[in-house]
Amino acid sequence: MLGYDWPRLHAALNDLPVALLIAAVLFDLIAAATRRMAFRQASLYTLVLGALGGAVAVLSGLQAEETIDHGDAVHQVMETHELLAFVTLGIFGVLAAWRLFRENRMGAAERSLTLAFALGGAGVLIATAVYGGRLVFDHAAGIPTEVLQAEAGQRTGGHEHAPGEGHGEEQVTPVGADSAARQAAPPDSHTHAPGTPEHGH
Image (tube, rainbow, N blue to C red; front, top):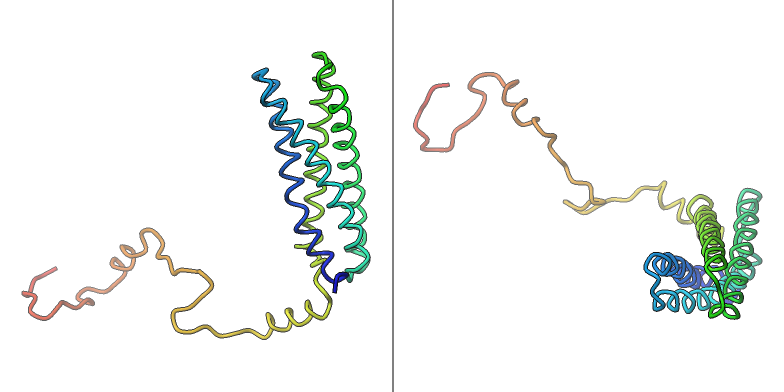
């Protein structure tokens, strides 16, 4: 049962480190612009926590890779996703260690270098997320084959809705369609409510 749950656990563990690492970079940018120590400290804390969370996410991803059904196409995307994840973890892991040991002794040039390093890491992090999304949304990775086949059968089999029920599509009358319909209608083709006085057109 645990093997089946590794893909779900990996998906659950991904969001927090991504948010923390992106926040760390944003705090670093704000600190560089405002020169306020509070933002610099916030950047360091979120960076360290994000790097630790990223390590856990990578480990769970390696376990998920061993348990999911996949073919050649999924394997290729998965390998790229895995490589990018390792690069991302390496960048932010080194950056977190660097700042923990050097935070209070950095000069302006070293501070700028760490910021450039963080921005590069954010770019690789986004690419990692894009490939992870491709695994799920383009290749249904993590969904057992029998579940995927059953779902495909339900979708192709069609289903019925109760009266008035739909998938959210509303019938919208295009702008000007009502006036165009009135112009196209033949004279005296409309009716009046009972008791309406006769009138000409």
